[in-house]
Image 1 (spheres, rainbow, N blue to C red):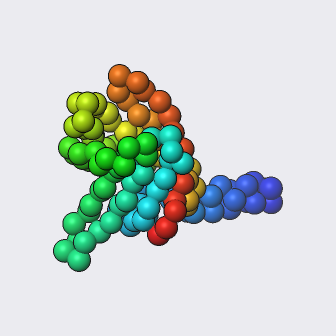
Image 2 (spheres, one colour; image 1 turned 90 degrees about the vertical axis):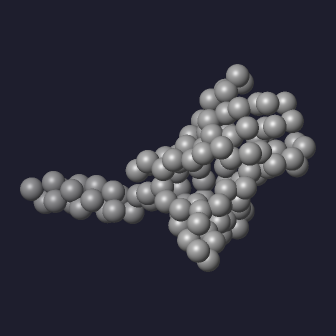
Length: 118
């Protein structure tokens, strides 16, 4: 019985510490270490959520077409206007400073992003 109580307490603490995808969590600079893009998430004084995404290789910004939050993910639809490249990126939290991004496009991939600054 005691073991059941300990296991239940541990499970509850793990779930209570799990980070939920939110604008506040995302705030800051994130890098793919040159694999895809660099992303800056910010919230303006007027509480507007801003996303700036820039190609790691060229430094040219991508156009953020739309974004949508779910409980566990952020979906961002972007266009790289230089070559009409379109993608949908699904951001999923791994820990407080790491996310995995599944990129769906003509050249789909999975990239790890690390937080640079909060």
